[in-house]
Image (cartoon, rainbow, N blue to C red; front, side, top):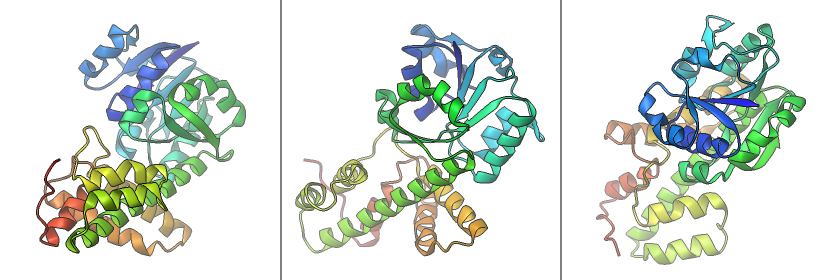
Amino acid sequence: MTLGFIGLGAMGLGMAQRINKDHALKVYNRSSEKAASLVAEGAQQATSLQDFADCDIVCSMLSDDAAVEAVYLAGDTLALPLKENSISISHSTISPPMVDRLVAAHEHANVRFLCVPVLGRPDKAAEGQLVAVAAGERSAMDEARSVLEAISTRQFWMGPTPRQAAVTKLGMNFMIAAAVEALAESFTLTRKAGIDPETFLTLITETLFSAPIYQAYAPLIAREENPTPGFKTALGLKAVNLAQQTARDLRVPLPTAEIIANQLRTAIAAGYADEDWSILARLMAQTASLPPIKRR
């Protein structure tokens, strides 16, 4: 079975490395130098998207709707040259309407399409410790299971319609954004009251808030650390905006989303677009006239 992977950014590179361990893999990125480590490990570097025409499964991890459209579509037609009955997997966090366009284009080309966004940060991608959220034809997911298991510890099938996975991912990202904002506010409040952030961190992560998302972000916020690579603030705003757009389409109120979006816009305006979105805590601390935390 020949596999392809398109998009070797912070998440895509780690995912492709995991797949490359057990499968023959072709890789492509607009900046070709990003493929060097994979080629050194035995992957084949595609010189253009045309090189994926013989692949049985092609995965992609791209930044947004515009990037996905540029790779996959020419109008409403599938521009990516995939062979009939192959499986095309989009791991990108994109809008449900874009997923619908991809579904129609793939159906017309007789290519099976799965929407499989993932949960986890770049370090988890490199370790194969992501969570895969899948939707589409169940038999196609079963055929692609070895690929999904290479990148993730758990795989969830959300339903037969690919947009179901896209909406699920937006809901999860919105919950993460809300958790980051709540941590930022709580640490600022307690620090201003003279409470040691390390003590508050231990209280959070070892009692009521021991879930993975708090285990991941609370230490970053308590110590004002900036992971590289992390989840960029600009991508965080994209995720919240997509959740708001989807909520409007479904006539669902998301009252806290605008608060979080405004905080993210403020961070971007301050020059932190490419910083991890946990930067929200440092900006809030500055607003509360708190000094930077001294490293221990």
